Length: 299
Image (cartoon, rainbow, N blue to C red):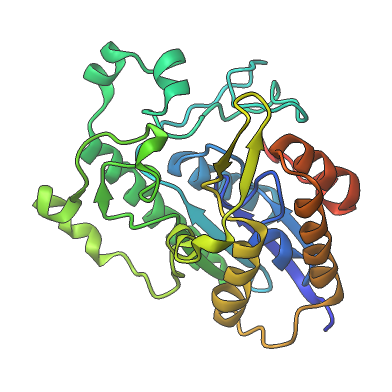
């Protein structure tokens, strides 16, 4: 299988760019030019604005393929050009120069302790309004992409019409805001957003992955001496999503190329060798050359 003579740009949160290659990184091996604009913790405002920024820098055309993975409405995005370490970091990548300082759900323990206290929640938080913001971001982004005549697809983590949680299958993650409800039943005025065109949307990645729980990662925690289950899709789940959902939607019918297969095999070996998350990520950065260059793009 030869590479497509075109460019691929992808956007999203940690479900698109994370500590190991995702569906997007595997797909990138099929294009001449590939950029992953995803980053852990991003909300829908940041994702939409980064699509716009990437377009103004690269001028999307009908020859380009764009994939936008939306997160959830219970994230609050803010940007600064000031150096700051408030973005979620890790032991390997420097995050001080990252412009978007979002760190996932407003209600996870890190954000509630450091950014969003009870006064902020009482003053600024309205779940229906944040849902509205996200839907408007989608509409504006679709309009932009349609105007460029590019090939594009969109997806989400879970059911975007449900209120209450960032990770619907992981209620113990500390990100639940209220009992899960159907937004259109809870706030009937918002039913206008049912008119959003979903003809180019793919099956939600999180819901797809969590149907295959036997493929989820388990890591060993050296501190607690216990194993824990990773909520993000594993490389096996990403590879399955690539081949069963993404590639068919793009009309890619050839077999996986040598680079995709060799990367899969390398990840299999590394996961077998490394039981804790940090050593697994270090192994990826040391053994998968292309992945060393994956990081934060843009302002």
